[in-house]
Image (tube, rainbow, N blue to C red; front, side, top):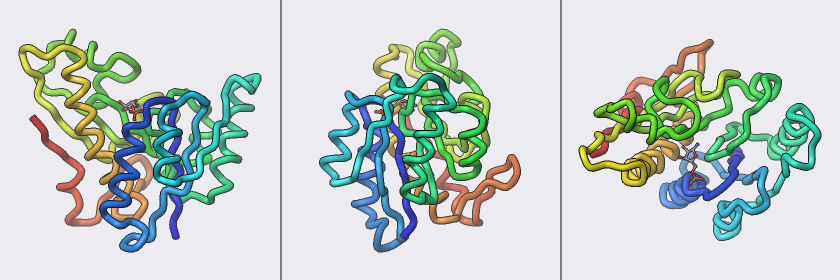
Amino acid sequence: MKNIVVLISGRGSNLQALLAASHAEGWERSLGLRIAAVLSNRADAAGLQIAAEFGVPAQVVPHLDFTGRDAFDSALARAIDAHRPQLVVLAGFMRVLTNGFVENFAGRLLNVHPSLLPAFPGLGTHRQALAAGVRLHGATVHFVSSDVDAGPIVAQGVVSVRPDDDEASLARRVLEVEHRLLPRSVALVANGDVWLEGNRVRARPGVAAELAVFAT
Ligand code: GRF
């Protein structure tokens, strides 16, 4: 069985989408993939309740208990390694990770970001998109590199920006895309259908179409 560890900091709707997909699509039986654990840096993350509902073990590694990023990242890495994961997924994990951590998990660390990277890294992506007047916005799943919200792109989902959109309406539609994009990307990478080669993402023939999602 290949293990997946999911890292969260808050609401956990992407975690919910992953768990729902893994159940609905029978990942354990068909792909030998299991979401083995959820780790959060915050004890009040609502996503911990979602993990409990799905019977997935969850652990809190509170960043405030550590004196610096290195100490926190070491503790986090130990907690992750205990599950010997094939893949680690940042699903709304709101901590910047050290280079050492990122290098340690190179090629098996995925993040979901609510914009069409490289446009709009960082926070407030929907506000940034509205301010820039872009007609297309969306979400990106990428391998994590030492630059924040950069790193080789696995999959992207596009939504069109409507004239009457505000941050909330745009966020809602982008989140729906994230919920389709992340489970698909995780299954493909964990299954070895998509992989990192140097700085390039490679895909087995036939799966490329699944890495671009168009919504309205
Ligand atoms: C998502 O928009 C994700 O792209 C970003 O943080 C948000 C997390 O939402 N990195 P949730 O906790 O998965 O509901």
